[in-house]
Image (cartoon, rainbow, N blue to C red; front, side, top):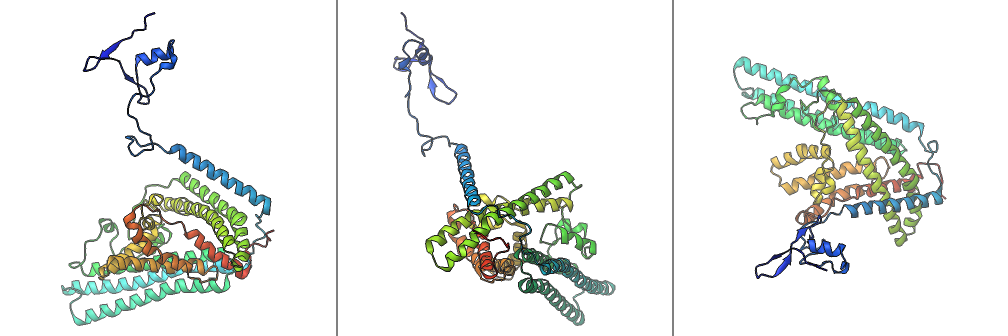
Length: 478
């Protein structure tokens, strides 16, 4: 029987089989296919030349790890399902709406604070109206006399005195907006959830008051010193100072999903109510999930940790902290999506606010510094615009200004978690300040991801609240 086949010849005249390429890039030939289909099936050519392992550094093509990712997701789901079953077998169902200790006084005070806190924004508006009237009066006199409004000792003295009084008025008003709420929450509101909502609202309004005052001060200066002022953004020409000093303009800023005041914001042309409904549904669903996870998993872990920490049982403490870190990270991620994606996008859509970059890809951050710049854009924009850049303009170095930003942020974080839990421990403040050396350590490495320690640190305050007052729920953990 003739087993000959077509051949070609190489440079030295030796016959070689015609080679083709398979779909995966491996060479094959008509001879191989004939041998595989014919009588000599055990003669198929397998090792044909130089090839590398796909995970080797010498590999020309980067392998896909999609399958590994899917496997890890499955493993994580299975592991957490095991914890769910273990928790249910040990504690049963701990979800109980009526069991929570919502005192009538907490609800009343929380409602009063929620209504009263925005009033400080309107006090800031009254202060700016007075400043605007003084500036327009000075500008009118200057135009009437055809001179610069800063010419003349009396005008200069009036400017300095008035602007100093305006700064003091804004400072006192902003301080009261935060101080009054903090005192009431710390001393009179028992439940940490109601206290947290009130404190968050007060901090947001305080930051908005500061931004409103700083921005209008610079706009006022640019109006009175057109020859010495830097050019304003083109967008501001739509509503130049002092046309922006209106209640309508302030009301929009109050509800806009931003902490930075501008006379004008980019706006959308219409409201997509279906989009709003989807985001609200996401926010409600995630809020319910956070509540269930906190009540069913975090609460018993916190309760059981009290005795371990009191006895300084180090292995048990580490085991509890690892359990807490897992559930706290899950709760934090759900809270991040609920706040920064669902609720802020819903609010932005209703307000026709067109800048929706409330966060960027912080999960891909190559360093700690990048992480803090990307995960919370509203706070980052405020800190950069009203704290960091003004300090650098005053002669501070970049590093010194950045350090002060983290110190300032640490104080706000301490208020945010320490006041509602009635425990000023300093953990949140230290946690933020520690980020300063971490930024410089990770900056050259560019490989470390952003830290995930905030939720665990926050739970330490609620642990202290549990130890001091007992559980927020009347359920007992078996």
